[in-house]
Length: 604
Image (cartoon, rainbow, N blue to C red; front, side, top):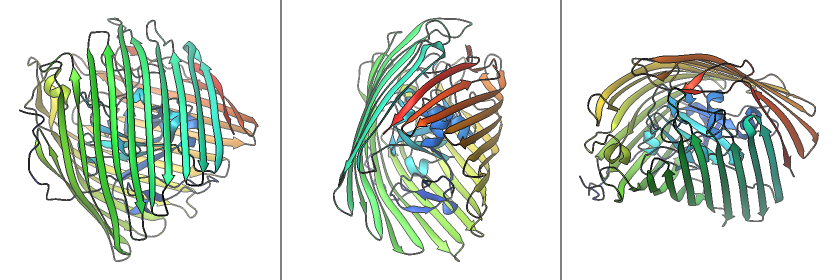
């Protein structure tokens, strides 16, 4: 089977655009906005988008006190869980964490939930998983999450859902800067600085970060240094040009599970660059994007690799008349690299993927919106994959709406699964169908917003290693169903409550997919003070399946207090795991008891 030979099949079907979704920010934080933004920058109401959407704002991230973006997902998004093995640093390889499950769908390493930065895919070219340690919270303006399969939008690796991190950029005229530091238990430290400048048609944003910790056990230290830059130019009222570059270098030690400690070290360099040309006219808007991700991994067990993941995206949304919009476009990406082991050691392996797509929305009878999309994606190894979506929304009134959708998700085997560990070059893509219905309710003024979603998922061709065979096989099926609830209540200008709950009924035990999860966050402002209290309850989280099942249930309570003695200065103290719970998320890796950190932020 030749990876570089690209099939000549012409993709005759169009499918849904690479759409991302976000809510507009409101400066006084009183209104909870109902606006979403598509990848073509077209603002439409969240009520008529058939997919399940969540958003985390930069203020939510700051109030949570988390250093890494992914750690905030557990608190603010129903149906999603991110594994951790310490207080800082996810790691890779043996004992690695940062695995993401969504609606009970998970894989190790994570290749079922696609992570994007500014709409561009971010995953390692050989193993196919994101690198969570590189996602620094201080660079992120907001996080947009599609809960449920988004292959119609982004192809492979979006089978369970999508996490899109939107980075910061300078929007106000003049020069702005921020910097800060924090210090905590286990010699955990963070230092960061940002600089933004905007003049006329130019805007620039640059940042630098450094995080480190000694870890909660011997030989579990971690450190990372990260640099980011973003430049934008408004060519005219119709066209904008944006470019960005990021580089991260990190080193971590892993002492293995407590039952069998063994030192393991990783030394990783990751980078990305992207260029986009956006256009906006009265009846059309879209974008042309080019991106390139690269990395080098050196592990203490002798494994070394270099990889890349590059591509381009072209899409345009047309509004021919007021009640209809249609988006058409094309995606192309190539990923792969070299490794010093496996069936093809030290040989370059690459995979090409090409897709054409179309997505349309039609308003019917003034209250009903029909959404439909079709994607035909061609993989240079596995051939064509057809991905449909059909959705319907009904807006009863300004406060109540219902949504329903049927969509397909899929995931192509990674180069690692085909050629490196327990390899099988004849694997088939994993596939699933998702059925869901949602109820959205708000009160006048949008101070209270509620969402309730019920879903059912059926999947096939699950890739597993089935003993005693030492190669991966398409040996599994899965059937999940559940409910997700989320709510936001702005009681007054000072008091905000976030809450969410999810229940997943799995037909078989799955690692890192809790049966029930409940989160509550209360944020209160009083003059120069800010108080944040968050609680999380996890029920039946499997940390081991074989040879015997091990499940954890626990409740966490965190608190953060900050004060602004000066307009430009913010000082904070945070206490984590106040109940001093003893628990594990990864088997053999105990999480810390109560621990603290304190620091400051300066903005001017």
